[in-house]
Length: 315
Image (cartoon, rainbow, N blue to C red):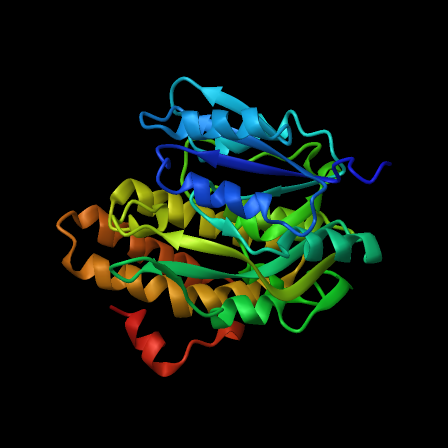
């Protein structure tokens, strides 16, 4: 392999992100590990996203563009790019987020040293302060999943890794994707896939380095900002259920308990708050049904929610 031969492909999907895509692409160009190529997927944009991607590919042969004339969704966009990956390693960057400068160097470097199938790093949210986007701190559940650094571990030895469920905080061996693709036509498509990566990997590495700045858009159009919409709620709950099921089927009981701890503390209470005032009774019914399912899990007793949370679950 020559010094310039790519070792990793970064898949960058986007729809109507022309305002943010230049920063995402600049974060790739700034990588200290330069042996990358990127597949940019314009998923039926109505703005200038396609032009931004085309300009990047014209100026730098490391960029390749795929175009969907009509939007097929984030899962389908990632899957289309996975079909053309020909490097040993693959990762993801949403077109409105940014990689930290040393992200590829650290993630690919640890894989080269350990031979693991997957490496995951920490990430932070970037929020608009009225003038610009400011990166926040690493959240506790992300820190628990990635700090301290662990090499050649697995989901049984490090069950808390299951909290790091986003696609774009990881680099994996492309071979892991031989029979794995993202669900299509739904939101939160990366949660189940992340758990499958953890349970299928012969071993994985985690590093405490912040590798991605995840943008929460000021206009409220980020997927995670739409949980009050009933269809989004259904996708969200399906992803949570599916992730638990993957861990359960793998026999990773401690990871199931770890996920339940986090879901009960972080996911359920905001949904209950929304349900209390939501105009559609189907929303409250969906949340109530989900809580009942969690209570019925054999691992629920070990998750042991604190008294205040237990009271919230009886709403």
